[in-house]
Length: 249
Image (tube, rainbow, N blue to C red; front, side, top):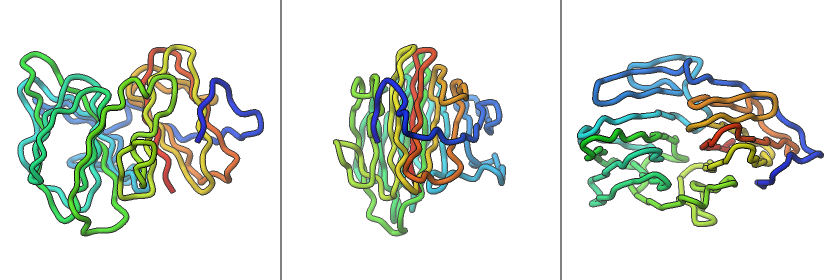
């Protein structure tokens, strides 16, 4: 992967399949307003069951004084990415923390954990992306990591999750890399897609252009076929923007 302010002249720009924000599943439970990029809970669409090992991207808004009560999970890698507000986390491994914007949390459910997530604010909504990744194998030992990246994401694609925890990223038990970026208007980054890999881009906020495609907040874009090693994606912000980029087999 590389980042720069201009596309690579020798690279190809792969075609993209767009998943528009308005096409996502949606549920409003009062305390929770959520959009599902892929099938989840009561929303089912056989055309959108995930993207490789990337199984869930839920854009959740949790009302003040509300949250997810204690509930179980197993055999899933769960990543929480807070955009606005704060999210209090407790789990059966003894972890208790609060996740703020700029922080990323990874929980390995493995053989089984229970946990809760809560917005304790009296007058502020918490917005976060709940991301599920199918692990490389079942029966893993449960685990937990959290780290602040904050301004490390500005003007670049900052690796925040990887299989080996390189460059200070959180370790996920799957061949998946997740990058986060904050871009000012007119700022660009370029991602060289590794051979044999595909990419999913999720626009968290703002407006971006990727090749000939304009992407707005909530939109997703995927490279449908594996790269031959000569593909590059140049992402240019048209407004103040935030995005996640996932690379996986």
